[in-house]
Image (cartoon, rainbow, N blue to C red):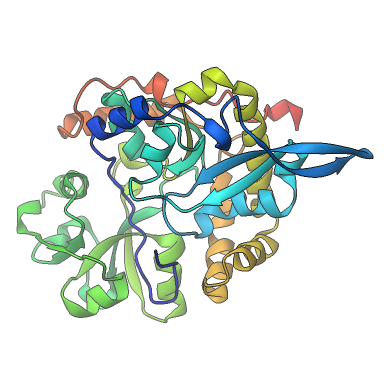
Length: 357
């Protein structure tokens, strides 16, 4: 799997969950936890604590995609020894063929990076994923186009070519914000981008695409290729959802809540470090993933670090109304199979207590 580089590959703002049947089959085939975080986890490296040797517990966390600045807090927590302070030896993994959600839901790994979009769909299909922290407090994704395409509002999508991945959610989001301006999504030509990056695709056969500004938008700045950016959250409160999030599964919480608490304490410290030290945090990510473009990582980190916590009382906090509003929106768009209970989809219980800091 290729790493994010200056080729400008667009980060997909939405990754649909694998069919529920496949996930539920995986749940029955795999025992929860195992050596990567279950109650019978093997121990790994050791660390000196107060003159005594502490045996560290091996724990894995799987990324949603290839490494980028959405993940810096995880790498900072490893580099700065925050996980070791909690007795954990954390390994950051790339997702397998089934994707991060399936690996976490089945118990193959205890923690992963996911999205409110996919967890909402999963919970409606009785897949036991649970969001335990919002990585970024507000949705930083949206529709982007080179400035010369003159796409400055959703109405300007009419008559243009959109590059996407064939997801019904893409068209539903576009229709939702176009409807507000009396525009017709039926006048948009949908083209499958395949493996093309944003910068290649807009020069080839599309006019606009859905991106995360923190990566592709920042890269456009560095390439001196001006873009117009329409953030979806600016057109509907329901679309200001959490993307990405840190996820686990119900069995992991039930079997070993102390592990979840320890992992989240160190992870929160990692993201707080990235908030307070964006330059140093960028260097940590560059060191850990040397194939990344240093200039892009540093510029992206500078832009994104203030947005991790933003206006929340603490990093990672999730509001019930954000989950409720997005679930109702998905239901209104006929994008959910089954009933969605937002209270079961997330928890703030494993974040460090604000008054304990």
